[in-house]
Image (tube, rainbow, N blue to C red):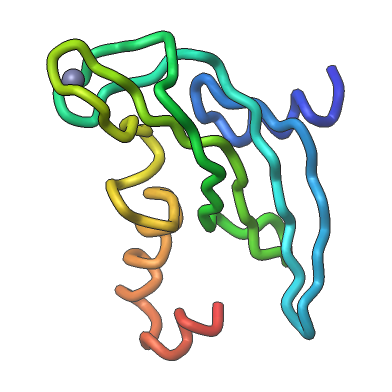
Length: 125
Ligand SMILES: [Zn+2]
């Protein structure tokens, strides 16, 4: 099994696979930018219908859980679908809430940390 396959398995997002990992540094902030490939199965965000073709796509970057000391950015193509019932809609993704730029997993982690740490401490985490 290749390292990318291990990372895909650890990520655990159905239909997505790790294509590339790059390390970037801005001042003291170190980032792991993970580029994802994906299957051609999309979910209409309005009705939940599964579709297999994209109307259009755009590159989306979202923050995910830290990878060791690195802030993690997931980079992938987010799709608009032409649903027969709803028209053109942005797809629904299990790991992302609508109009959010951080994953549900990171939202959950921050919410749990806020139970035991101050907001200032969580913000620097
Ligand atoms: Zn629909």
